[in-house]
Image 1: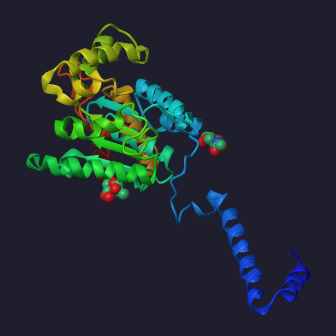
Image 2: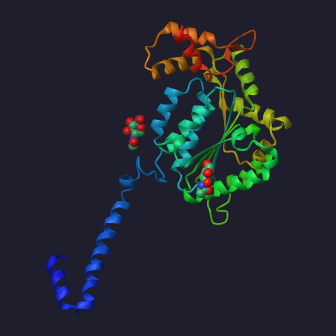
Length: 333
Ligand SMILES: *[C@@H]1O[C@H](CO)[C@@H](O)[C@H](O)[C@H]1NC(C)=O
Ligand SMILES: *[C@@H]1O[C@H](CO)[C@@H](O)[C@H](O)[C@H]1NC(C)=O
């Protein structure tokens, strides 16, 4: 309405009512400004306020990130890309996405979790919608399992209520008490909702060293047969993982209970890293510190690492984990 029309309305009304159209007009203006704002979430969802948005996954960017930052893990790259791509583009998933990452220390499990988090939320691990739990840190005392259990369930419920697309990462899953695994189980299952909350858009990532020895054995046998590591296929590792780890009572009870019910969507194997992969990690480390890429230094650092098995010495026993401190050591010389 133009000001002229408003004036006519005001004049036509008794004085007591005259206030009404004005305040109503203000209310309408305020409301339309607000809806305008709300229909452009990016306007206010940014560096100041982080919002629970269902971001469209940029699969190309994810692929590029995996290619450039993660070395020697062609199987993990393939599975993660496929899993996230289909899950994030499905508006009505039947259950939460559950990824179980297995492999030796330093092979990139934590690293890939970070990349996953960054592609679901810009702030990655710092996002308030991404939750990282480390068994030894968050749930250290066995006698407090009932308390942890209630707490963990309340956290998951609270966070998913606030944001359906929440990400939960559990590090050191093999050290997690079976009682706590039971606490998580209902959230991973095929329920439409539990007490009015749907968990089907959430993402659960489990990290574990369990199976690392078996994965290494498969890789080593492959190598001994003169085959290329990159020819290794998921099925070569998957069957051995499932038979070996999940039927082994010592590898953690949780496996059997989660596996029996098919609650894990993807098993992601991490292969032991070779000398050439370690060199790539060193290169990236040097670049990130702004140093020139010097082949001598790279070789020196890679030589500082220890390799196994005793005879063949082909796999780094700490993967790329201690590269940072070894670079310090070599640069100092
Ligand atoms: C997705 O990522 C690629 C590679 O980083 C980039 O070139 C492209 O612009 C991105 N697409 C969108 C829609 O953001
Ligand atoms: C969400 O999870 C965090 C732990 O990551 C917890 O501290 C917080 O209380 C939870 N929020 C709700 C609303 O439950």
